Image (cartoon, rainbow, N blue to C red; front, top):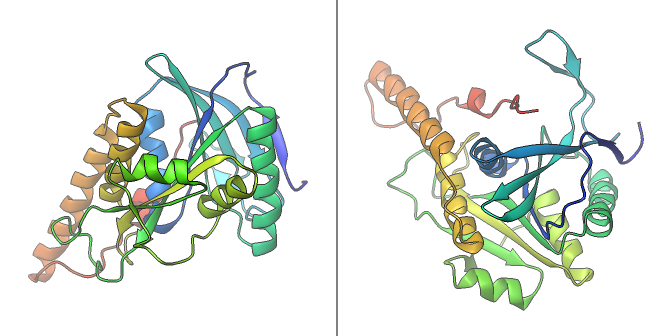
Length: 262
């Protein structure tokens, strides 16, 4: 296994200039965003990316086989516009691996695929938002851009800049930072989530609405809305059992398991 191995699944000769990145992370906001987008559009799997920096385990499949964890790049079409979507099972675990992997990933998507705009999706864990509670949150989406053009563009769409002062871990921040030093358009969009939310479809919906405005395309939210209802059902059942107000933590980890879209 090398630092960055690309397997071609389907040949690609398109001219998509925009890449949307949704990987596991805080609240799994990016992962849920990507899952919803891929489920609601016509998609084609183009590439699987493996790396020695990605965790050392195998994923069991429903057909009884197994495979290595990976990141994947899909092409999708929204009306007449083609886009690329990067998602996957997990992110690189070490700091050194993050630098090596994301540098090679950035070079691949810009030099080989011709991407000019990189939009990464993640979560911003708000310290005042402990429970999975829709009423107690502001539904804010925070942004950090690679240049003034992207900042001004998304500020007009309702994204907040300069309000979330923290570090952005992983590809969500690294790719946009690399975009800045390489004169490429990039932005990280962070949906407001809680500290104890392993799966937060509300935050993913909030970010999806911003992306919809940017793309001028109404992204369907069926998957996210259904997941939101299921989570509320789990919480309500738990609250009924313990006969108390909404708890600070409900185990929702089974809603953020690897997807079987292949």
